[in-house]
Figure 1 (cartoon, rainbow, N blue to C red):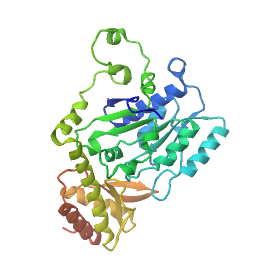
Figure 2: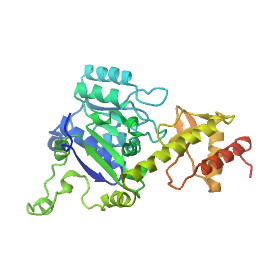
Figure 3: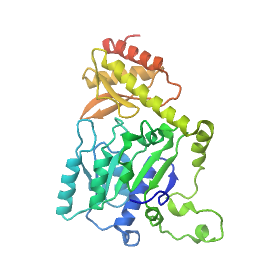
Length: 338
């Protein structure tokens, strides 16, 4: 593995663009001639059904097509199954196709689940296949020594993305697309534009050579200001508090009859439901949102509707989640109650 300081990165306007940038870098390494000659057939991306929709979108943009994203089964906690990954990888190679990248997720949008990065990473390293980790949500755990083990194995990744507007409290949008090998990003965008790149004496590093974007907002200032105000320890305490509140909400619901959680939260996202009637979940969610005191969303997991809570507001208190649990219990008994 590379030593510290040999990596690189660029800030993008959001995780979708970050995922595209990372997969463009994977394509540049695996098929360097494609920038000039186009993408030959037979390349695929391995991901799960719970990977972010932007992975499939990126496959289409890259010229692979949406059907080139081969789905790897997940375990009961919605995490990529390493054994299934090995099997599907072997079948893919035996069929004559080439795996462009494996995409793991650290903090699924739906459930907050974190794929087993150590097992996936070692496998990809041994096979010489690009591993991209979509950690747009979950990478915030890296700032906390206590939470860092959740992401053990992320160091095996060739690329990761990290949204600072998810857990680090910045305004939207700001995403870091980070690369283990500096050469990966350097060879991704080979466009010649003398009106932009023709001044060798210009001071500083020309980041436009490393990004799909040209004109950009000063994205780094968003995080810089937060670091200036609270420091790394302050950000760590903020992330830990959000994760702890999600676990506390899980404990509250687990003690109340009629409630079911999908499992203990792996990040600051919790899936839960009242009974198993999907229509009831929709009615409860609509009522909660209409009232305006709380905000929850919905997620579809294996064709069933679950309610979804993301605790992200730094001003959320334990009394707030207790009040939400109380209101949910009232609506579970009578969705039309006032």
